[in-house]
Length: 220
Image (cartoon, rainbow, N blue to C red; front, side, top):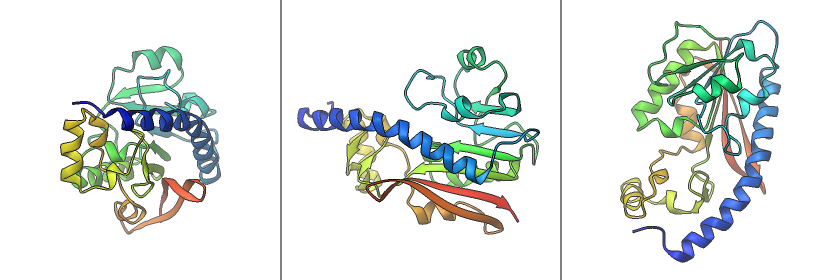
């Protein structure tokens, strides 16, 4: 069973709007990042969560915009051969975000855009944050807001507000694996980070409604 016709039409309309929104969202995130961590010569930066699907709108915005590519290490779980060819100055590493192959404090700043919701259950998400904080002295981490009414991956309204076991069943019934993400609200996202960190929060919005949540952390 696939998505019913009326819901499929709603999704198509929302998907068209989402493509337009994504371009503005990436620009907004980049501006938030630049304000938090103005790029400078000599810093070591990790971008965690790059995608081999580089031709899709909005993918790998950080790799495209960061002005010192020779200082950037980018990690993804895919075969990154295409990215190595397109961005030869960037160091690409295929690795699991829960077990990063870097020493403690390897990076001055870690950037991760909309990855934490993909890594698994709560324990996996906590492990993901632990790894970020271990390898990076500071970080800029984003995730879609669970309480925005349209799920930003699958472009379907309200389904992600249902109890998680039901969402998992629907994802199989509708053949929609993108319903299986574990989304976070602002409070749950904040609680992922250890209390000894200095945190600040931000977001991108549509009509005043937070769409993407941002946490900036720094070691005290």
